[in-house]
Image (cartoon, rainbow, N blue to C red):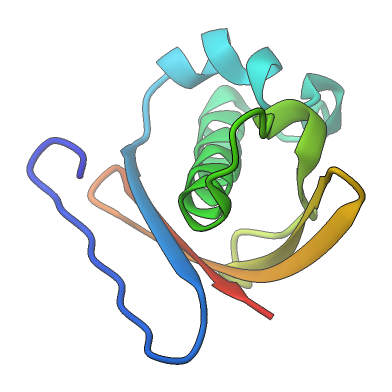
Amino acid sequence: HSNNFTAIIISSSKEVGIDIEKQRDKILRIAHKFTPLHEYRTLANSEAIIRKLTLVWGAKESLYKIYAQPGLSFLKHIDVKDFSFETEKTTAQINYEGRKTYYDISFLEFEGFTCVYALAQ
């Protein structure tokens, strides 16, 4: 949940995770803890950077909810592939303790919020 919004996802056949976040500039202060910042230098303005970082954070949060292993690092073990806002999807990989798992990531943005959900491939 985030402010007035709550998200729920259920699947009977695949592992799933979901996250919802308010888009805010606080993400700029913590981004170095969960993603390499140099990857975002090509974005046109700070609003685009905030949107993209919020999507990456939401993707990693949704994956953590699926994987939930002690010691799993957002920065070291979870890789969200680059994407464009228009596609509203990407893929991600968790590489942890010699095991690689792959996920499909989808997202939507509304009213200054980002909702991201992950499905195991």
